[in-house]
Image 1 (cartoon, helix red, strand yellow):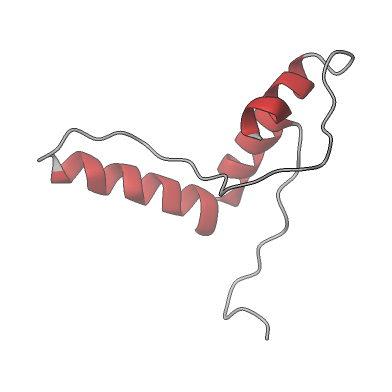
Image 2 (image 1 turned 180 degrees about the vertical axis):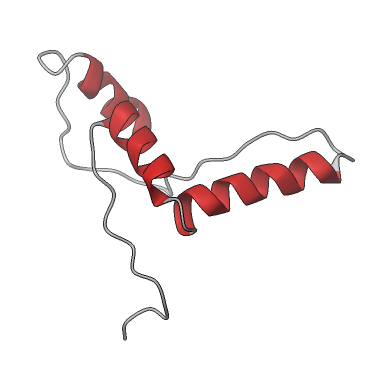
Length: 80
């Protein structure tokens, strides 16, 4: 779905989302095996951008690439 969102952002008159998706839409980074320092740096960067105190970094990239605003994240325990 991320590719479609990006295509839609680049060419809104060419692509349309049918509103159906399947499978998890997860992202990852490749890290050379046996490089724990680089792995820790990547993990920390993603965590801070997505869940930490600098949400604006992730939110801006999400909007720039997909044209969408992520839901507002609230600190603390999830609501039940």
